[in-house]
Image (cartoon, rainbow, N blue to C red; front, top):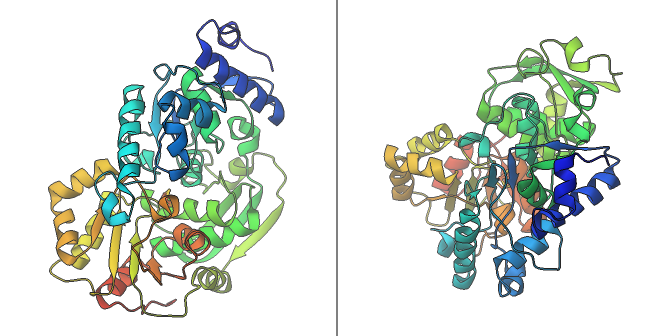
Length: 424
Ligand code: F3S
């Protein structure tokens, strides 16, 4: 790869061993990908934490050892300086307030709090959410970023028109210290052009239907770039968040266009920009039912855990849940966790939504989710969720059956302890 003078200086160790390790990692990574150069980034979203039991031994050597090994792929421990560019923490495994309810051991919760203190002082902004774009990290169109977390990546590329590949812990660590990432994949304009045309023949309007469309489409297009036309109604941050998270779960979709809505395609022609179409797809009632049936794998209608907020809920979603619960009580056999970024939990507290959810018997959680933490309420046998992504992953991660439906159906399941949802 060709390096600039500034990059050569970091690679030669003139700016210390940590940046040298970071540049070495980026060179190895970029060369494996066939990248010819690096690109400057000033927006990194990665995973810098110690919230899993597997890092207990490493933590004993100090947090520089944790960063060196997990974020720079280096067995040699190097002193980690302040981050060079704007960097934030994505989701972790532990809610710093509700760890007892999660079932996390005390020493692990303490370890994560210490890690946060250490990494926070190094300039890693502790948003602790998979949706940094909901709490102020909103890159502009064309901005090069280095983000992890598939649901955030597809939002960054598709909805915001910023540019990132799905990075890993190591490459985001190296990017945070150098302000560089290999120039390949979705950093290159030609790779962002459409490959598949998806004609949507039925109304897609609510969150559940956006999730179903994304889930069905992702499984077919896998890692290609779909262009959607047709009856896609009233798009919003929340709906596109669910659509993208679903498409990135069943496939590996990182970029899409909805001409007239997303920023890189004023029309279908611009979405493809001369790239040859691989396939034309149609989404109708049969395709919708197929996605719904795949996501609903439970038989037992007794629901004992309702998970809402994957990707993390916007304040509007928290409000909707709180208002449906207001003045009522959850079934004695059912628990409910409502996930939202910590910054929005503060807003939800001020609005009274947290109290409304707590009074009903639910918990508002931040910083984590069951798929990442691998913790659900003890004794859970059947889960209900409004998230196609969570419905996709939880049966594999927690080995538990899941019902998928609208947020109203899920809240109702929490109140009655029974699943009465269905495809309408
Ligand atoms: Fe976020 Fe966890 Fe879902 S990381 S996107 S809430 S699986």
